[in-house]
Image (tube, rainbow, N blue to C red; front, side, top):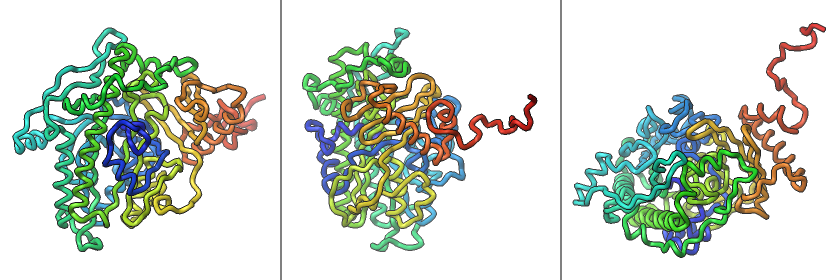
Length: 497
């Protein structure tokens, strides 16, 4: 799993420049999902949905703790997780890298072996990383040439990129891949924290091993070889850099100011794109090391490999960086690759989600996937079966820096976003794939708008997402079949005339 990784940076998703040979070979030997979406474009809630198979409104871990604005900071102890299901079935579990799944409960509390890393960024002062550097006689972390913009109050903006004065072997990404391979070797020998009640087909306990890279999340901090790998002058700015924010929720322009886009200049914007692509290429190399170890250890024929990301990254798209309260495909559409032994390579175009990975893991493990209530196993699609699939995907957002509720319904051709505090959004993805023109209220799309509003309302009610209470009195969703005022005591027989 990578972090903040947009599909536009991968060769197998039609980027002709970025070198991703290892993810490309994973795609070429497995199933590539062209249209996979995160349930919410923010780290902790998305990762909690993967862990639980539940939508964010249901698991209620709605914000990153660093900028939490009063939401829960840990999952309810009774919340189902696939990790605990695997652990209880006797599986060995390992997680190397980003956890970001709560404050009090760590990955170890859910059964994962591996060092604990706090927060959203490469923890370059972690004792195990420092021990790794000492063990291999590698130089310490040091950066220069920091790239920052200027915030609306005249201060320094968030760090966006920097040069790292370490060789590849000393990077946190290489360290994570090395530790992953070491744990993989132990699991391949049947070593782990527990023995399975029923051993796997090769006589060893089955295992689940995850590597969660912190990159290519900004800041893009890379050795010169990777920072300079791509020529900034050859980088094309995203088409949506033409964003005017006209008829868009004002929060988007506010976020553009927060992320200092307009203070950077075109040259710096191109340099940031080049650095982002270099980061992706560097991580691909490390993923290749892990895939090679799977082959070397003779595990390829008995091991499923899944790759995805928690959400995407703007990198200048819509004059934004990072992610935030704007439900564009740049941050909601994510890569999804699934290789299962014995299944033929293919490309699937169904609208699937990160949350569907949960039921997929459970079904691969032969366990009951029904507790992952908002997840649907991808294995029938991986097997090449023709099965009915939803023509829509529903996503949600709850805020970062401040509460900001949104709901989005996307089809293959259109997208509706409900923003209670300002203007709603409607995009024709066929004529406007970069989502620049908000068509909400456009008479030409009146029928589409009405259908999407009604379908979003129906799905929210079916899920039990109380956001629908906002929609009942505000939109033409049909006559309410429940007391929308929640005041049933105010009936005619109690009223005084």
